[in-house]
Image 1 (tube, one colour):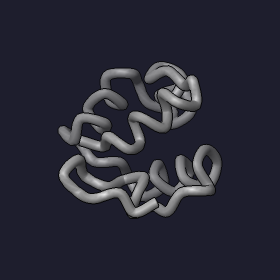
Image 2 (cartoon, helix red, strand yellow; image 1 turned 90 degrees about the vertical axis):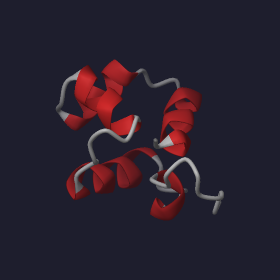
Image 3 (cartoon, helix red, strand yellow; image 1 turned 45 degrees about the horizontal axis):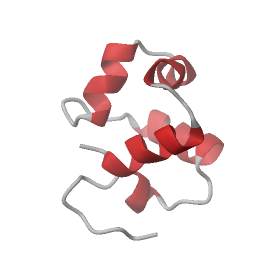
Image 4 (cartoon, helix red, strand yellow; image 1 turned 120 degrees about the vertical axis):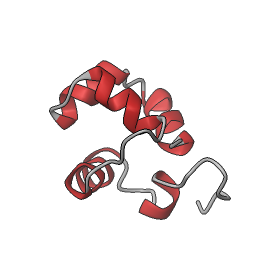
Length: 71
C-alpha cells in the first residue's frame, strides 16, 4: 500500500478520480495501485513526482506501508 502517496494526494485535495484522470487511467486502476494490488509504471511514478510532488523523494512517495518515513 502506498500510504504516503495516498496521504499526500488527500492533503493536496486531489481525489482518486482526479488522479486517475491525471494518469490517464480509470479510478479502479488508481485504487489498485494505491492499495498495492498493481504497480505504478515508471512513467506514472515519474509524472507523479515531477508534476505533483517535486519536493519529495521517490523513495518516500512510493514507499510500501511498512517502510519508515524518509522525508
